[in-house]
Image 1 (cartoon, rainbow, N blue to C red):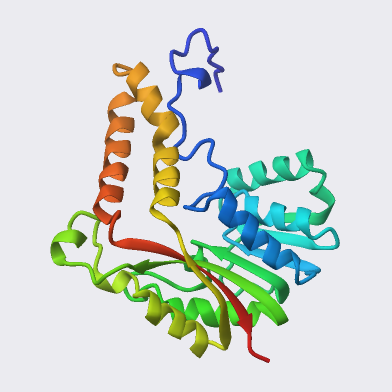
Image 2: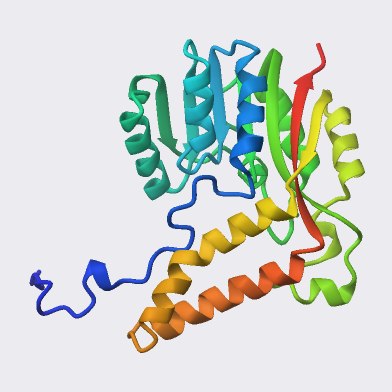
Length: 266
């Protein structure tokens, strides 16, 4: 294989467009203030084990471990790059000996049960989904009930419709969006109760949290596009960013995120 020097290759690493989401703290609309409240409630239960489903780089996982010095954690994800970032963050914070990042599917996982189970925007990792198996939050909740120890806590971050979406609203969202993609908040909470939980805390992401996340998701890439309009990768990057932004503006007033802190019924 012939090596190509950076001098001969016009697309060096420094010239590449930033990855969407680069620089985010949490991969979701979660503010520092809300995260601190969540972590405080979880740490107060004195957990010994924490399991993070679809953890990404596991920022919330690491913060829970930092607030609960006796706890050990496991993060599961299929994105190796995110997991590697998580390992670096853990090492930087002196938590490397207390957390394991595992690159594997969470479907049917045997990594539980744990005292705290986190699943923020990652329910799809716990159930079969596809054209013949639509995403089913009831399955997700049953799996989370299986994975949490008696007396433990589950934090589920899950999308919900703020009102039943119209056909016109659905047409502005992601490709193939339909009303069955999400539930209304009351129906989602009812499913949690049916799965064997009591909803100890129900909260939803604010418009400010959504805007901070969505704009932050594109920020570095938008700035790069403004400075490199004629770059060889600008056209495809611009199309991807414009498409993502249009989808967000389409669901901005319709889709919400609920953060449910759930306690299993004995």
